[in-house]
Length: 106
Image 1 (cartoon, helix red, strand yellow):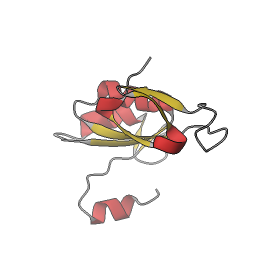
Image 2: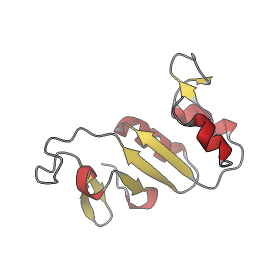
Image 3: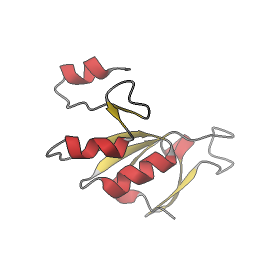
């Protein structure tokens, strides 16, 4: 797993999930939450459906790094937009990381 050891070295609690169970816990990112015990913040990176699920399941604040298709990559086409409390943000230009409190899911 990419940087798993590096995160452990700096004291992070790391729980890995894979859909087929070939490594870590079998299941999705949300299946790891019950195994974390007490946590104060979440970091999540992935496609929008996964981020939505983590958003709903997480009991704390967090940061969400969006994996998004970017048509132009310059913020012109608005194809990678995400609705937030301050209006739409372009993942390619204003992200890719947004805080949980600013995201407004449709």
